Structures are given as C-alpha cells and as structure tokens.
Image: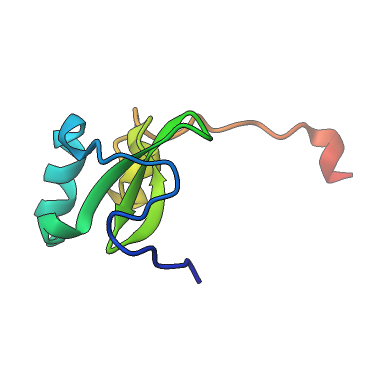
Length: 89
C-alpha cells in the first residue's frame, strides 16, 4: 500500500500544480476534488510527481503516466513490441 504523505510534506518539494492544467482538468473531470490533485517537483528523480489524495500516482512526463489506461488514445499508449520467437522455445 502506498504511504500517505501529509499535504505540504513532499520529499523534494515545491508545489508546481499550476504548471499542469491539463492534468488537473483530467482528474477533476473524473470526479477528483481539486484540493486532492497535487503536482510536486521531485528533483531527486528529475521529474514532477502527481499525487492524488496525498498518495503518489505517477510522473507527469507522458499521458500514459498520469491518465487511466482506459482513457489513453492509441497515440498515447506505448508501442507494442514483438517478442522474438527464440523466447518461446
């Protein structure tokens, strides 16, 4: 289970939610109260991190990291890889 971190006590940092209006809009439309959608800088991993209800959800680089899988378009999904036949023998 993901550890809940009290608001304002994120490991690296500062609140950068204002830089991600698309993410806030997406989750708000899913029924998430805006006060529970937070993005904080995480310089230790070189990314900004999305927190929902105080729990880490994902990074903010690509839609596939912050959206629900069922809502991703084909362009947003990772490319399918072909597994070489030698692994099936």
